[in-house]
Structures are given as C-alpha cells and as structure tokens.
Image (cartoon, rainbow, N blue to C red):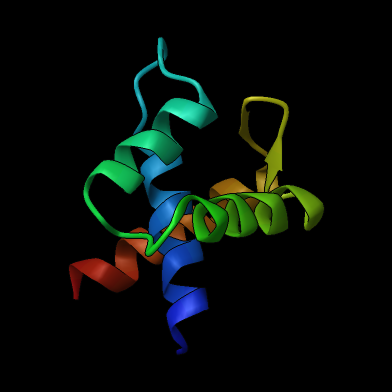
Length: 78
C-alpha cells in the first residue's frame, strides 16, 4: 500500500467516524491539524479524488465509500 492509499483510507475512516454536526471540510481540517497531510494541497487532492471516484457524495460517504471505510476500519484493527 502506498502513502496516497493510506491517506485515502484514513480520510474515509475519519469521515465514517465524524459527528453529525461536522462537515467533510471539518474532517479535512481536523486531519490537517494532526499533520497527517504535508500541505493543504495534498489534503484537497485526496478529498477531490475521493469525490471524483464517488466515495464522497455531497457531505457524506456513498455506499461504496461506506464499504471502503468499514474495510479500512477492519484493516486497522488487525
């Protein structure tokens, strides 16, 4: 797994775990605050790709995004 894939998985998992009152941008900002991303550009690239591949629709995960997030959650538990 490359770093970009890892960033996508962590991002999907963070969206899955977000509070109802939080937006996708709030999640991205939180992840940037933890220094998970090297820059805002990198964060925006990851989230843009997740949107372009229909993992994120509107302000939530699509069905495929939800499935990938749950898969990532299981993978990280091991």
